[in-house]
Image (cartoon, rainbow, N blue to C red; front, side, top):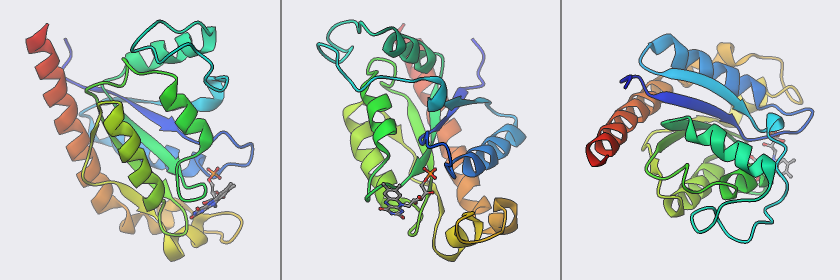
Length: 197
Ligand SMILES: Cc1cc2nc3c(=O)[nH]c(=O)nc-3n(C[C@H](O)[C@H](O)[C@H](O)COP(=O)(O)O)c2cc1C
């Protein structure tokens, strides 16, 4: 078994004019540059899930919808996750909540971190994400990355013209800590699962 965790960067917005691509590409680049994980983008646009309509969570019985099953197979391939988290009305996007609901077994005992964005850095969304993840038996990193305040308005194309690289000095310390923690938890949970097997 490779000791390099397989990490998915999950883009939590599917709007045609979403801002999410900038933060997703930026955190992907940071994660790839480290060399201690195998990281790839998972775009919810490539997983057009219906609103949850199964008999139960797949913890209790297998899902029927082919897209839900394909989504579960995608999530199963990874040891940990980086959620790219917009804030919609002080929480995560509906599309991300639905995607979290559409799997269960595949999230259990896996760590995640997040990069949030919004007027206050998406912190309320990330805190809600942590609450949801408790029920999914996931492990949250302590550190997360937040693009907020004047940085958010400078890089969001509706308000400013800067790139994320222009303000990245404000993000790099938290990104390093968040990714350090993510790799630590991924290795710890992988080792614990291997010992159980
Ligand atoms: C339905 C909706 C609700 C929003 N609520 C918030 C909010 O509570 N806090 C915030 O900082 N931004 C909020 N925004 C603004 C978003 O931060 C901004 O639109 C951002 O670009 C959304 O991410 P996306 O473009 O990747 O979808 C909201 C936007 C939408 C469309």
